[in-house]
Image 1 (cartoon, rainbow, N blue to C red):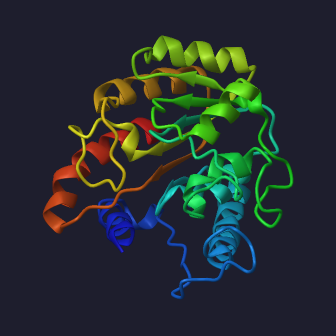
Image 2 (image 1 turned 180 degrees about the vertical axis):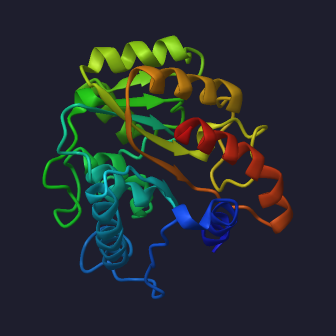
Image 3 (image 1 turned 60 degrees about the vertical axis):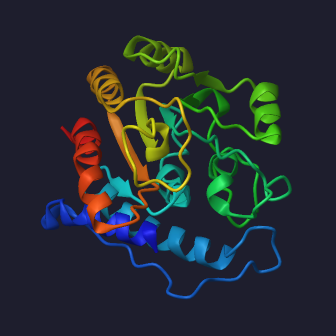
Length: 256
């Protein structure tokens, strides 16, 4: 419910005329015999999102998706995964690289990127998975063992918090061969000193100023085809108010 409150708080500060609300199932959902918790709800949300995204795409617009957890990116990134010209900039403290077999929690938000790369429940894997060379982990610092082993095995590009800069990000996009970008921001990529309303804070994160500056520089070179902001989970209305200025700075960097 904190994620619901977080999404609502962000929506209340956005122009109503430019906002589309995607309804989500009220029921918890069922795993349907899989190792993915609430699989039926994940599928239902994905399908509803894709309808909204396809409408925007037909009008020539790109979407900024506001979560919810990182599971919303299944549809938003999946909608552009068939394009080999798109680099996915995964700003996230966690890589979300589990499979249903390796996940200790069965929570889909820890499997999203791996599923988009083609390893996941067959009902969730996109028809055209992302190419490994087009994915760049940014500020990711909380790997579980199976995730770290996979990232090392396949050679996923990664920019640590210590090495992060606009120049490093530009170089990584150039090396991928992509000519456009999708920007995923899980708010826990930021240092906990920067934002309070997150469910899984990790120390030694990025600061808002360097993230917004880097996004603006990369956008000046590579057009943006989509973005997502996820995992805002304030514990109180006061906490939401305190954090919104940070979130709106990120939105401004993505959209202006």
